[in-house]
Amino acid sequence: MTTEIKVPVLPESVADASIATWHVKVGDKVSRDQNLVDIETDKVVLEVVAPNDGVITEILNQEGDTVLGEQLIAHLGNAETAIIESAPLKNNESEQPQTVDIKGEAVEIKVPVLPESVADASIATWHVQPGEAVTRDQNLVDIETDKVVLEVVAPEDGVLGEILFPEGTTVVAEQVIGSLIKGEAPAKAAPAESAPAEAAAEPSDVLSPSVRRALAENGISSEEASKINASGEKGRLTKEDVDAYVKSKSSQAAQSASAAAPVQALTGERTQKRVPMTRLRKTIANRLLEAKNSTAMLTTFNEVNMKPIMDLRKKYKDIFEEKHGVRLGFMSFFTKAVTEALKRYPAINASIDGDDIVYHDYFDISMAVSTPRGLVTPVLRDTDQLGLGEIEKGIRELALKGRDGKLTIDDMTGGNFTITNGGVFGSLISTPIINLPQSAILGMHKIQDRPMAVHGKVEILPMMYLALSYDHRLVDGKESVGFLVTVKELLEDPTRLILDI
Image (tube, rainbow, N blue to C red; front, top):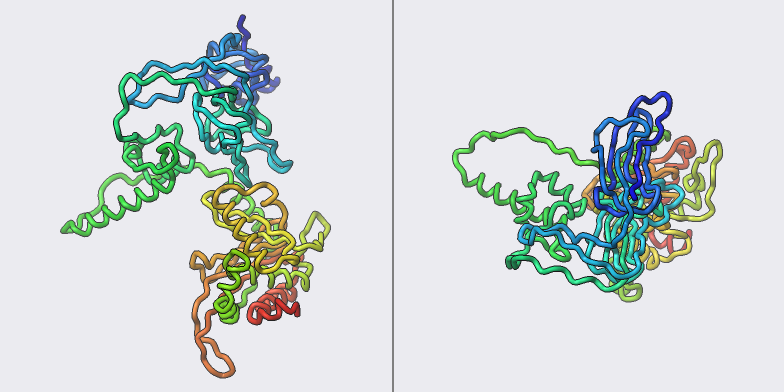
């Protein structure tokens, strides 16, 4: 028995529609209420879902075809056997499709519950392919939201049955994206010919999004990519492998160019590359633009003599590291100074909500952290109750989680004030943009030796420019300058931080 899949009834004002995206193909097993195809009109996109469990037996219209209301576009048949196809074959394997009989209970793989403020997410990376054995709690797929990357792990030991949605697909909370068959992995049929000793680079359709983006940005074809040494797990190509290859290639080209004589004019086509923004990059862009357009943002500057803190670090760094298990850096001093200054200027620790001003009686500081996915601002909470050692441990933990893509929604939520350090990249001075809904942000910069007048004499001192961007709707010039001067005075005499004066 087959079930007809039809275009939904279109609104009276809509004459026809077009098939935007098929999410399944002939032979795919589907479950009840699973989205099969998106139908696009000139106003909205309609989802056509499966009326019952089954298998797609026929697709009558392809993506881009114009269709009418209630037009038949596919057939859905009953699922009588549980058979899955193996991962795509390599060039050196038999061209006969491999199938395995699955024994055991099927378990749905779903998108995790998303926070209230997150409407949807996208599939970033599948770490396993159909037919591969997995163990309980093994990471199967990364789901990327506009804030964090969520890991979906295997609920049981078994075999990955099928992948319903590929990388890059937009998904919603608790949507079924694959299946897991509980039990041991079935033995795969041996390939017709033995594989060569050298492992070929993995096919482009299983490369991670970051690798595909790096290949596209550098104009590297799939054929050329197969020549890059892959150092990732199971011989997978990583972004670092691509970066190393590009650097090596550029170095060789520079050496060849310097050896050639005479130098000839460059020839060839002028090309350009178009790479889609990641979900996080789009969110960053929108939030920065919103901050510029919706706040009366001004920036005030000052400078701080870093010599007292540098001398203190030099004297106690070994003892500090031995006791706390973490190095003594500058960020803990800045965090303590900012916390004390926020106590004295509560408007800078406040935010605007409609026509109300919300004053916070706690001190949660957002730390701008550069990650492979972009700049994020995880939160260090209750900094007024933390010592320098606890602050350094907290900052290090957030930085490592950001680097490894392990930041959670809780890590990213809240924060009353932000500290960003452009000095680690060599920035001498900048005007940081407010992190909404906060009312101010402090920018740290490069420490640079400069001649300074001290008691009528010129001394060479390690100086840093500080920049405080603030929302003038809430913070007056007097408060902003007073706040920054307080931070400066506390840093130039760190004893005051310890004595709380």
